Amino acid sequence: MRRHLRRLQRLRDDKPLPGCLHAIAEALRPAYELSTRRDSTDPTEAMAKTQVELIADDLRTNQDLAPLASQGNLAVVSAYYHLHTGQVEILNGAPA
Image 1 (cartoon, helix red, strand yellow):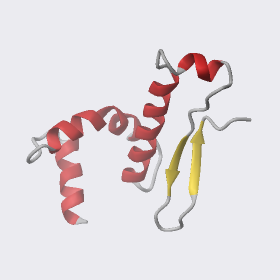
Image 2 (spheres, helix red, strand yellow; image 1 turned 30 degrees about the vertical axis):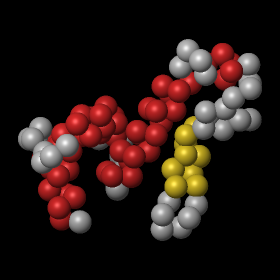
Image 3 (cartoon, helix red, strand yellow; image 1 turned 135 degrees about the horizontal axis):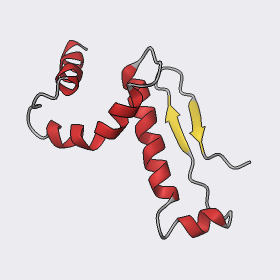
Image 4 (cartoon, helix red, strand yellow; image 1 turned 90 degrees about the vertical axis):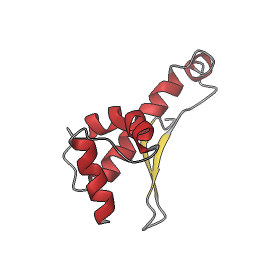
């Protein structure tokens, strides 16, 4: 856990990360920046949920998927799986 917190601090401080973690961190940076604006007791969970929502938004606007979604033939649903409970939390996009 402490190593994880040190890496988060390095990301916050914009310091280089070891190995290929830098490329992963850069890919997650938009989710990190958005999630820091949320009021959350668990920053890792907030960032994971934000990343899932961003990916779902990208899929909804994909040139091949958007027509299917707008016609109601496809639903792009973002969800978060809670390891400690086994429950799935639907974040957005669930069909009505």
